[in-house]
Length: 487
Image (tube, rainbow, N blue to C red; front, side, top):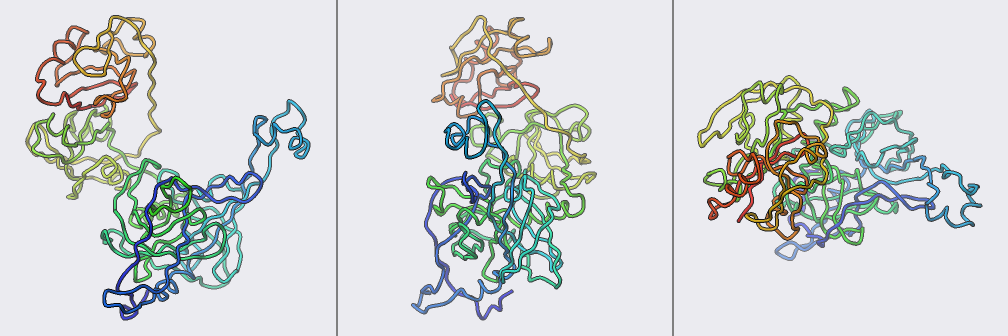
């Protein structure tokens, strides 16, 4: 850690941009598995009074504990691969006509962070995914072969280990939950395989969800992150590890000033489970949820958007046993507010199997306390839908066409006999319904909390209360969802 007397007083905001971070690979295909990296110089910057300050102390504190990672992955080129469609390349790879592709080794580069002096290293799951061999090169060029302890693609966190003859330099872990928008941060890694590099920026946002992983709570930064930086360190101005660089958004594939790091308060909990079990055991409630935005809040009669709505409570689950009901809005878990689906999902999944969580829920306008004993999450649930046919209407909800549930439609959608409603056959992409999440194949079973038994019910209910958003309950495969659609 750096003495405060040596800390710079002002940071440098990097450039802005947008793209999912991709890996940096070596070899004929140039396909890789590393979604982040950086290359903007971060030397002396003018403070408000004009005095120049250096960030060298921050870099010196972090760089020894950041490593370069290279992996070998065995891949097979299919017969329709562009290279193998060319007769010259087929002869080069020795692939006879009509034969499947040929296996070959692909090399990728990334970064990692030493988090204990006995050789444990944090990196991104996509850096070491499907790797047959992992090599680690320390800052002073010593090279080791690493063992993959565990990896969690749902959060993009992986833990690897090397066996060294002496204690290794570490990057001390800091409190990422204390980060504020505007705080200065430095990204350290191996961009484009050129060698260890640092870049400087600020925290642009916290608790970001970008839809890349199942569980996200990203730190967004404008510190330049480029291919090869994935798994590298994001540190504060004390040289403490705040996050693991994971992804970028950009149209070019290089830094556009929009980079994302996995915060240490999330990465640390994943790391502990990987170290203990080699995998992550997640807890669950057993519910289908919906965001509560302004439109949904109005449809539910709430004074403002807050919490997470329970669209469905599955039977024989922790939520069901605790007394949660469809239509409940979870406001707090263990005293902490939950403001989004990802927030609730992260909080519950890492609370621990067997943990008893105290919930504050809003039910029909009144707050209620419940206690739920969390169980281990089972395998993923799947849903299916298909195209229906029958008597239809496009009256009532702009851009939406629905049809009655005939026996043929039921068989195609694999619906139980007790499911009543109308099936959505078309949703205009420019409509409010599309933007709120209604899709072809959904079965509308309720309108404004009233059951829909047939097309006549739907036409009557959809015409009521046109001055407020309409609340739909839909069946999608094995799941039911609540969707609030503005008129």
